[in-house]
Image 1: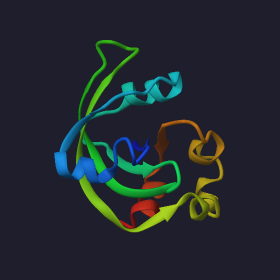
Image 2: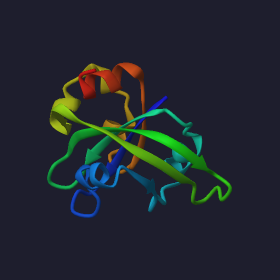
Image 3: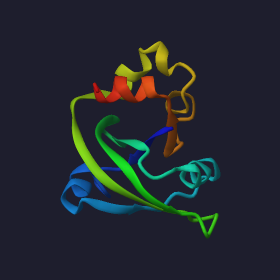
Length: 126
């Protein structure tokens, strides 16, 4: 499984993650998003998406570890990948049939979104 993680760049940006190399992804309260965090496995691929004015997929990361001992606040450690060479905006994403049923488009406020391999590859250009 792959996931897209949304973050407000003025609070925590992809540049912050690149600088720090790893971080614990926290602050998630939506029950569906929390379940998605709990379901993550080490080495799964992530896309970091800037919300707010940007609304753009900007970088990659991967899951290092998941501590779901507290099911309401799982601690997911992630490590930085690389910046996406050609970042994709939400407007571009919405034009792709590949994302027609995606929670990214259908549930705009969901902060942890599962993605297919095809969606990951389209977003990252890999």
